[in-house]
Image 1: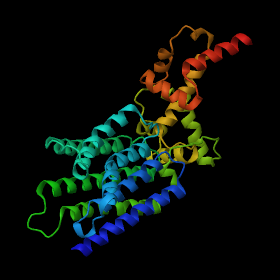
Image 2 (image 1 turned 180 degrees about the horizontal axis):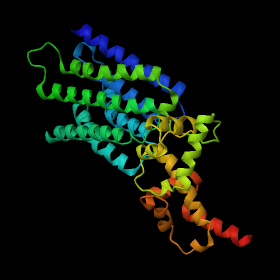
Image 3 (image 1 turned 180 degrees about the vertical axis):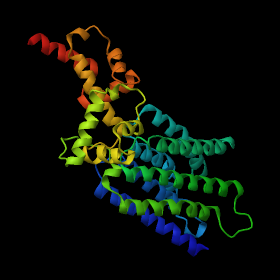
Length: 348
């Protein structure tokens, strides 16, 4: 049984290092890469530290590995959020969740390896609940933006990612809940066997992905060079967005827009992504809404109107989402842009 454990354990560590190296080599600038590399290192530490006696590290090496594996699920969570969300930014909420998850585990690890008071028994149950909550949020947030995603390979990856996380989470929960009674398998080996398929899938994914599918950064929306068929669709799309004022609709979906244009949803997704350079339907929609807002700002008769009123009239749902989208595109807040516009008008 030790041979089986050693094979999956050390091959898993090798695959994790391979994933990290590929990410650093091919996609270093992506916002998700640091979290992926840290997830690989932390999970490899889990494989090294949480091992049967025959394969276990000794002394400080064991203690360090057990401390480094503490945040492995948090890094996977942050990797998924940064990979599948175009407007991901580390926030206070991410740090609070990370602390709530990691601090109890850190206490348990320190109590087991150093002269630290033992953790109360209920803390183990708390860690289990937090693990399920983080995994659940990871799955929901990954699936939430699937319809909005214009990159076909990334939409497929979302589903596979969720399936893999669910499989690992359920397998780990079952193995810990029911143990391995009546079996020669140790819990440490079961842990590796439940995680290894996810690592193997991730290695396959990393060697076959399109770099566009893992990077939201530096989207370019240059004027497209279109053939006749695409040019007609482009004209109809611009007409619908401007004259038809589709951008003003709060709940406009790509399905609705495709139906109005008389094309399939797949065709429209591919066109907006490949011809226009957008990877996310919300970004495409917000660009048109921001253009409309800027046009309204430029009208002297609108000088008395609050920014919120103009933003809502142009299709944004809230001032926070509008401010975020506007600053991301223009490099300044709507208020700063409007003041700059007024100053320029006075100078003229």
